[in-house]
Image (cartoon, rainbow, N blue to C red; front, top):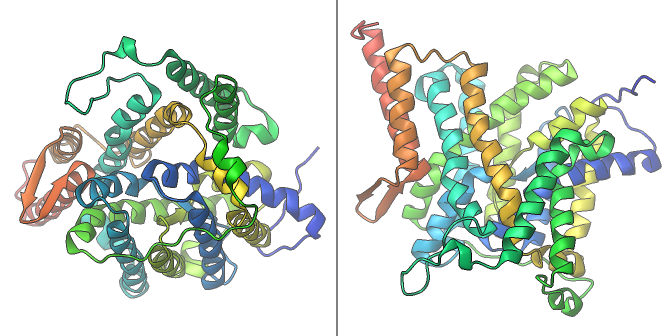
Length: 427
């Protein structure tokens, strides 16, 4: 039986649209709530701002781009660094607001100057390296949460791996295996939600093993308002966040190109990349002031559209409204918060690995030729700078990990471009 095609601007009866909207919500849900849980903020505020952001985005793009905005993983590492330095998530919000303003500025640059300059500042070899570093840099955190890596004690000693609670390892391993085999074996609707299925399965096992504190769910009210946080503006926090903005910029562009291919529409031209960036940027400025994590277009939802051939923005808007509704249900928010660290550790091993592999995928899809010294050097320096734990302190600003890698990669790219223009390279 041939699947029904539902176009970008097509509307269908609400009873038929609801399950399709839930499908979009479910596809993004598993990944998008991991970000606030890892960072340590209320998942409800993220759901609320994801929903509001998606509606703003669809309005700015004149209902011309079927995209759901979810939480970006690119900001986890710099946010954790900011929290470690200042002990307060609100400092990171200033970086999020900067990210939104950055997208707004870039939208106007793209409108008047096109896209060629992006290839100069961040060629595929640098972009692929930075995307890979996002996952590789977070990998140790996942291993510790899952119980597979020794944990430091308050005295600074290392807890031997064999002394870690076996229940933690069992739950994390089970969660990981469900995610791995689910992504390979699930069919139909389950095929697009292996992450969520793995988290639910791990949660059930953890509950049976007595690892879930269900009291917070019992004490929670049914109707509550999400937790808002006022931003604390800090230049150092903005500088730490800034490199991630470039990563998400390239991710945004690639998502729009892929969505255009799926829908057989030139979305880069109509409604245009500039409107897409503007919608995302405005969404993130508002989100930053509210106390939520940054939004980005979600690959999970692109996958849903590719499988179902349902591209309706109307359906995505309904999914956004459902997310807003869920954010105000206290029991639901508390249930999310009760997910044990072992469950999150198991699934993040897979997710962080997938992020790293996406960086290598860029090398392949963009035909990066590592036989050329320029590409070899750019990739080598960028990756090692990101994963070696190297740190550079400039005044009160600390550059390490992805931030250091992005800045070095961009600076080298610009220098190599200039040398190439003057025919000074030996290839």
